[in-house]
Image 1 (cartoon, helix red, strand yellow):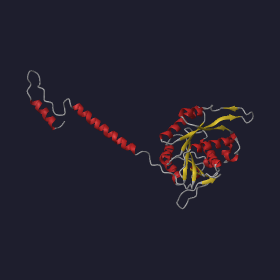
Image 2 (cartoon, rainbow, N blue to C red):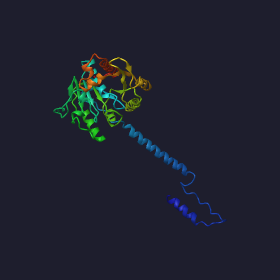
Image 3 (cartoon, rainbow, N blue to C red):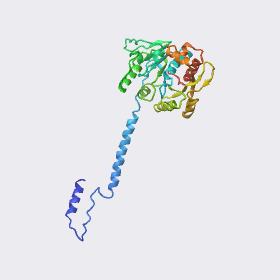
Image 4 (cartoon, rainbow, N blue to C red):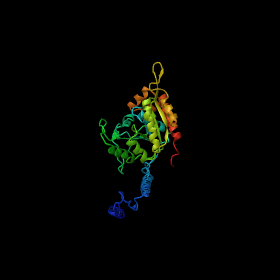
Length: 324
C-alpha cells in the first residue's frame, strides 16, 4: 500500500462513529473497483513479457550443423530397439553401396560407443594412425573406410562412461577423423532415442535415416519412436527395412515367419513411409558377419546379398542430389 492509501486509512480511523455505523471512508486511489482491472493489466503485461522471451529463445534454434569435411552425404541406420540386426544391416548396406557403383567412396562409422561391433564384422584390428593435423585415419577393408570406438579400447574392456563422456567420444569420432573424400558415410547408430542420436542429428547435416526393425510387435513399438524422433529433429526418413522377415528351412525349404509377417509394412503404411526391402533370417548372414566376411562380399550371388544390394539402390534413389 502506497503513501496515499495509508493517509486515507488513518483519516478514516479518526472519524467519529454516528448512528452505530462507521462512515464510509473515501476510496483511496488504486484500491477501488478499478483495481482488478489494474491487476489484470499487470498480469497481461507479464504474460506478454514471457511470450516474448520464449520467442527469443526458440528463435535461436538448434545448434548450427557443420558438415563433416570431405563427406558429401551422411546416411544413418537406426533402430528403436537393440537386437534387430541393425549393425549387420549397416555393414552389408555400406558394402552394397560400394558394390552397386564402384566409382563411389563409402565410409562406415560405428557410433555405438557401448557396444561397437563393426571391427569384428569388418575383420579389422589395430589403432588408427594420426595425420600431421592430429586426425585419426580410418582403418580400411573391402574398400570401406571404418572408424569405431572398438579401435580405441581393448576388445574386452567395457565402456563405463556417463553421458558427457559419451558425447565427447562421439564428437571425436565425427570431427577428428580424416575421412578423405567420401560420397557416402554410413553411420551405425546405437539403439534407442537418446543422447547420441540427438547429438549426431543436431550437429551434422544428415541426408537421410533408415529404420531397421523385425516384424515383431515389441520391436515395431520402438521402431515407430525412432522414426518419430528423426522427424522431430527434421531428419528425412528414407524408409524402413524389415529384417529377419522370414526363415526358410535349409532342408525342406519350408518358410516360417518367426517374428510375424508384414509388421514393418503395416507400420510403414501408418507412418506414410516406404519399405526399402526385406532381409530374410538366414544362417549365412550371421556366420559371414561373425567371421568378418559379410555376405555381400563373400556370397554376392546369394539371395541375402541381393536383398542388401536392392536396399542400397533404394536408399540412393531417395537421397537428395549431393552437393557438387
